[in-house]
Length: 196
Image (cartoon, rainbow, N blue to C red; front, side, top):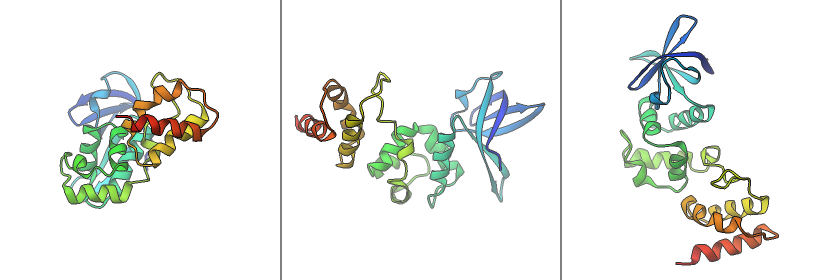
C-alpha cells in the first residue's frame, strides 16, 4: 500500500524508528534503526504487513533495493518478517546475496531463527534471483568505471564458479591490462586464479 514515508525522524529506538509526518508519528520496524538520526529529514522505503497477532506493521528500509531484498526473503517458505529483519540486520545485502549465490548453507544458519532446512530453502528459492543485490562489478574499488570487455570477463569468471572474493582479488591486476577482448581477460584471469 505505501511505497515510502518522507518526514522527520522523531525517535530512534532498538528495532524501530518513528517517522513524523505532519504531526503524525509512524512506528517503523527497521533492520538498521541506528542508520538514522533523530531530527533528520529522511525518506524511508516501507512495506506494510498484516498479521493476526500484531495487525498492521510497517517495515522500513534505507533504499528501495533493501526493501526488495526483504521481500525476496519473505517469499521463502519458513521466513517471516521477524526472521527477514534479523537476517538483514546481521549482514549487508552484498554479503548476504553472495552467500546465497554460492549456496553457503552453513553460513546462512548463523542467522537467528534460520536452521539448516530453512537455509537450504533460502538457497533453493533465491539462488540466481539476486543479481540486483550483488555489488556492481562495473566499478573498481576506487569507483572508476572498468571497460566492457573486463566487465564481461569478470561475470564469466563468476559463472565458472569462482567466488566474488576470488574475482575481486584479481580485478585490480586485470584492470591494469589493456587487452582487446573479454576472452583474453578471461584467460589472464584464469591464470591469476590458478596461481597459488
